[in-house]
Length: 351
Picture (cartoon, rainbow, N blue to C red):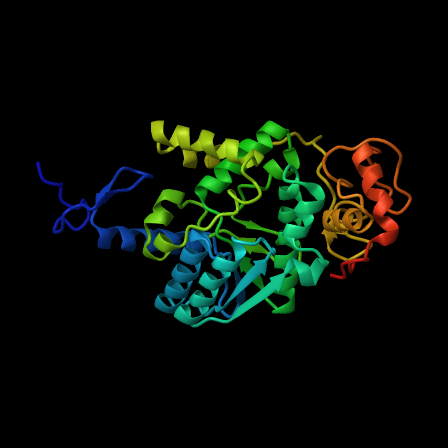
């Protein structure tokens, strides 16, 4: 039996089944439907204002590549009036970031929008390769996640951006909801489903792909050749990976499950007695923080002092005189501290 006709145009044969709703569509109708849904998300949630300078967080992977293409196209088609530019972070991961940065540079030429690249090495004095040699592969995602987030904010501030658009998709947000429930992290759970975050600060972030399935982003043309991921390099056992596998299993049974988890996260109500962290600024670098020192400064201080595990997870032992943070007096940290006198000091942050 031949393929069914497209459910929208009725003229062409269906080329695919949409993962989110099982619609059978031809390729052209899928592209139009995908773009229209992103436009509706942007308009309904008032993600942008005319004249805003918007940084597109560009990693060279499928999500950010498609985001750059779609925002450029919709900005032209619907006259958003946005000043777009690409912002990419070079973590210094050999064999991963080199290739993906080449993709971002091609996007710059293809879409005709400027590109700014900042590196961990220039900002922090450490590349991820060097950090992994110090910390090992178990906790390196903590460093990369914290440093990357602040690096993006620093890059956006340097380029005088009004807002940042990230490629977080529906799968990512559903995973985050589950992770925060498992961790009992009420503060993050209360804001992880927000389509715009950081409005109280200098640089709001928005997620145009909040309701877009990862599988549909992969089906969209610009993503087909850009499937880079750091998972196989330094984070094969990352905690998020287990949540991702669980989400994929749920999706295979009930495709609507991803959007339902997001809806559940949006619908949570929190007791008035729940204490949320109060946002302030880091005493050392001026970056937003709920503690005296932001996480990036704590981690960087540990690296520079030969105590790379300082500030990772829950620690015990005597308080550090410099930071007031509990440190773990393990044998491995004692051994690394012996090298302090021979160590070359790295630069500190100044946000």
